[in-house]
Image (cartoon, rainbow, N blue to C red; front, side, top):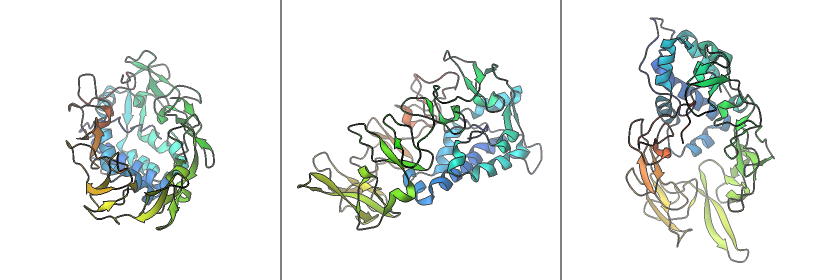
Length: 367
């Protein structure tokens, strides 16, 4: 998105200040929270507040993103700024954040905002040694063919080249989670996933067959989330309910042997009462529709599990927003150095071989 290349797991809070007494300058230690605010604003600009909130599942985008950044390569950036392989101009940082905050869907595929390059850029030329992307000058990134540090600064990757994140790819491309190759994303009406490219930012890949592994079709959020309360819906066909309404699995049509879905207002099912599972959860706040394998279409609105409790069962929420389900147990997200049982519970996205959350460097990928 920008040379201020703080990916979701690439910052570690440095606690530094390079403000030099200028009231217009942003201290380095404020960058994670300010960057998180700008990125979350851009994402909301792209899909709209209702859909953005829906996919967060109750989590706070700014808080979660800030923690992911604080447990990334930010501490290494401190060292690199001191060493002179990264230059930072705090007086120009706010212009970068303003540019990022104004982005819409199309802008999310543009890797480097000029205002951000002016605020933070590397000085290492193509072919030079590096440990993190921010050391590389201009739009270059840091890669290692051996999986060991240091890596080398290389140009952004073109279509068809192997990648590990969207930010590795040239503007207009995304890194496919299926093939780990840079690809041109699909647009409205195109086939997506299961052998086809991912959708462009702001579009939803709907109608996929998870069993047969057949592609879906890219649709806009406004087009997909359009059915009103009381109307029919069908997640498999990409017909979802409007804001404040859940698409619940109502019953099975015995004649057509098909699951029938209906739009129901969120909160229609009281805590402790009977419910039907749906997307999003239609139970009262703080509860979810707990179902079992024997009764998958009927359940009870039950308190969403906290950390250290077994994960919820059924189609709806499994853990509280500040926790994640790992090996059937809700776990709080963990900072670097905290013991972990799986990558998903680490803010950094990597549970190291020693059993603690840690940062995998770009030049030394996690195994």
